Image: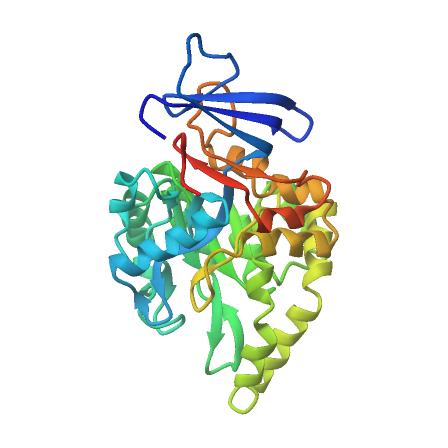
Length: 363
């Protein structure tokens, strides 16, 4: 499309789960519901249109061994784009990916800075590894470097204990989260275990990643405080393989990981039923492939979340949570067009008919 071209999207435009319109126009890269006067260079796309999908737990610029070069990061972002993921909350990366902001053909990224972990308590080359006395200072640093989020590693295997254990004392977490909030940033944390959750939620955390340790006694606390979860079920599917690798050295940890995996769907459904906000995230990057957002939505449905709510967790609801527009009048035209109604069958998300980013058809 040329710079002066107009895109006409017709069929069914899902502005919201119940707000369905017959068409929209893209003029100057933005959404309009008024037919532009005198439009000549018009291209038409037909189908079911959704706001660009959200992956709320993704790592662009991160590979299995740590930071990756710009060419690899570009390929990661393009893979996400091909699946209709046009907004990413990058939940921790050691790479500087600010250059992506200058590329109108790549997904938009909301960064959480670099992971902050306890010394020798996370994957090598991923995080700042520090002790509790330095937590406030590092949270302040990453709050200033990020886009309104900070990412903590809330628990990890304690090799002396032989099992998952919290990384931060309660008061250190409280002070650090308060500092992030003072600087206008929200805080999220990687948490697999049960034991790390209460202290972090009572310390004021905004979100928990994975949340496999969420139990019946903790669910009311999450619901009362409005703490969101991003379950990353496509990542939790790897727990049996991880557990098998630890059977000899850390049998207690391995057994724990298997239990968390076995109850994963019940955990997510219990959270949803209690009114806890649930959002789509894949944990792409590191050892997990990019482009898995459709699979994650399908996993939420398998867990028992109604299809429209699972769809909202990667579209309308997720964008509102992250403070980014959907298909409102005047919003940047970031949208995906499908052959069928994704509310009726979320599996259509795996096959976008067209991807439009900043008003341009990129696929």
